[in-house]
Image (cartoon, rainbow, N blue to C red; front, side):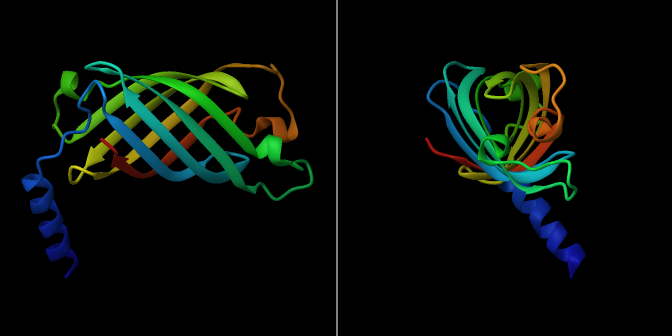
Length: 165
């Protein structure tokens, strides 16, 4: 049964004609889980296409679960992060599959200046999955301690992506 379902899914993926990034005016909404050393939570982001391979957006993460020890007592300000971001959408440059997009980028957040590398794959015109890796390039506090480490470290996010065009 599992092999049959996998085969059916692969066939459907091959028959779908979705495009991962369409350039100017393209809009993407992502929602998923965010995982890091000291916390895990929810991530939402919105990207808007400015050109053939350029998009800008906003992303926000809220840490729902904090590492269970006495050294981290995080309030709302520690758990919440919002950032503006710039992406270089390279799916059509790399040309692996028109349903696939890879987007490196930079972000400026309430915690740091950072970089990210993301991947999107669309199963249909409106729905797909994403994975994103984020890392701070420059922290506002060079030696963050306790709750200041939340969102100030390497993070991984993955979940669902939707076309809003």
